[in-house]
Amino acid sequence: MEQDQRILDNITQMVEDERRLRADLASGRIDGATEQARLDRLERELDRCWDLLRQRRAKAEFGENPDKAEVRPSSQVEGYQG
Image 1 (cartoon, rainbow, N blue to C red):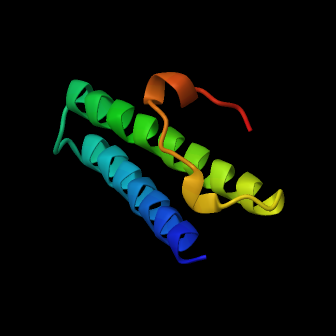
Image 2 (cartoon, rainbow, N blue to C red):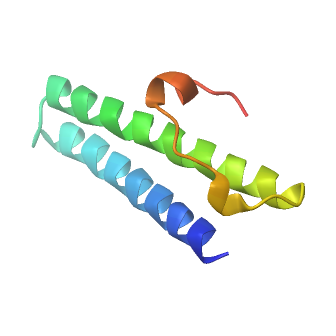
């Protein structure tokens, strides 16, 4: 599924961004407040991407159209434990 791969690519990019942020903090290029604000945004977006991917896979598994899966607000998916 091409769309699933795009979602996974986005997740991979965000994980790389997270690693860069942590390295920037460790090297002193950014301060803790900046890192935390950026990490918070990244984590919310990661939650949303994982949720969308789970929705798509569940729909496909049960014979539904995975393209009907919708991005849900971060408040709805934040902290989801899969």
